[in-house]
Length: 163
Image (cartoon, rainbow, N blue to C red; front, side, top):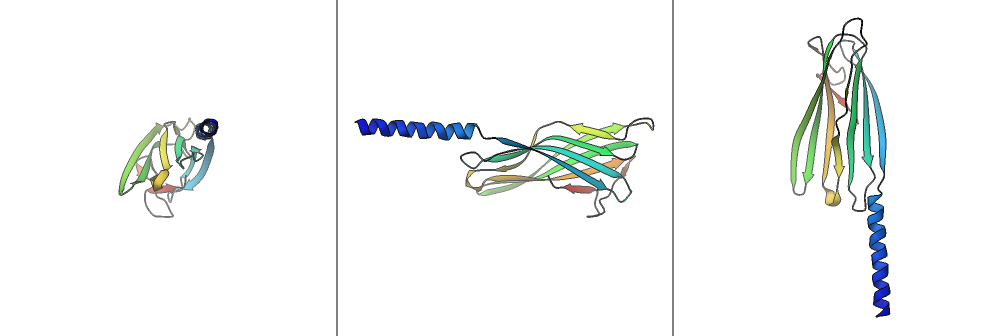
């Protein structure tokens, strides 16, 4: 009886330490600064703030986009469109989805260059127990004075960002 009681105590301590470790999982804050230049000569500065969790006891890990800033080198009327092209795998199913948000601004020649910020929290990656996962590719399209800016690398209106 004494052995069973001490085994129960050890089991409860192991379970408590297991749950305590998973509850204290830390998160890393990452900042990505990217400089782009369109074929039309517009310089585009992107700053993204990300939060990435450490894997918990079951291997679950997430990455969130917490803040997104776009700034340009010139004045004008701008619209920035950010597209998250995502793939989700939940065994045995695979699906694709998109999430889009935009940031608008207009400046006079007396104002500062275009600066737009978005502070929404968006999950852009997930890795889970059993191989379940989500991953999102981030693309930026920017329109200046009604003209789509083109990426000189891929020749399209969408700049692919590595976040």
